[in-house]
Image (cartoon, rainbow, N blue to C red):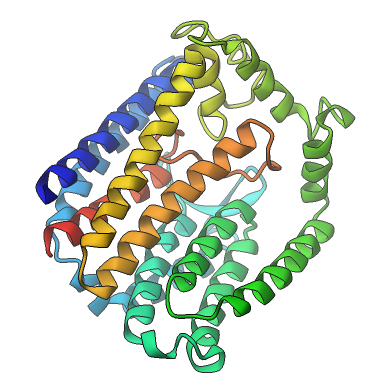
Length: 361
């Protein structure tokens, strides 16, 4: 049964990522033809990353996950160093107003994506080794919380609010399932909300996103443009959609639909049926991961599975909520489906580690 769960998770992820590559072609073909002279530009890049990611996922699944526990401090230091280096002008590249990329040829690498895995590994080790101290705020929670806030601050200097929130909420959820006190999280929740309000106030573009979230028609050609065009894509989808390659919003209405708003095109072309299939796939990924979580005896392995799978499902929920207008635009991608090498490789590496924990029980 354990092997069948492993196999099911592996090929479910492969199927979802393959569907993502197909939808990236549909969503980007017009834009790619106009800008690069080839409608296959984004498709080819994504397929290459998909092949590399799938091979990497299989290789990682055969590596004993306890090695990550042994070298967790080294991994964390590498992640911190990369987050600092990317902030240096001339080393880090600015894209969409955020200095969060290393440019290598035509490729871009996001250190904040790598930090997701690094921080989850370190937090899993910390929680497994300090289980008895987690009810003590000073000795148990504050040290790991300080490291989380340090990384959040580095990511916010880029700035990348969406990725920072996904990482922070994932790590807080890992702490929550440990032996820590619930009353502490109530206080953290209040402070967190105040902090988010402060971050919104000091950055005008975030305030514009809040305004456009409440009423996108206040600025239909500015901050409200993306969400309006996204809803225009979702609306006509109906039950079965308009058909593959028949999206209208990809004709320069919805900006770069192959990235954060790929789900809008899926909704437009495949309707409610496509929405149901995608949501079911993410539910099954999390459900299978949780089955593995409850089977795992090793405490480090348990925290590792929970953190990695929770991070994927949280990011998916956040992206889908943005696309349908439930939360303000955050800039996070849809795992396995959105265009982007860093996101896809990190997501598949996360699944590889989950499979490793399952295999090495």
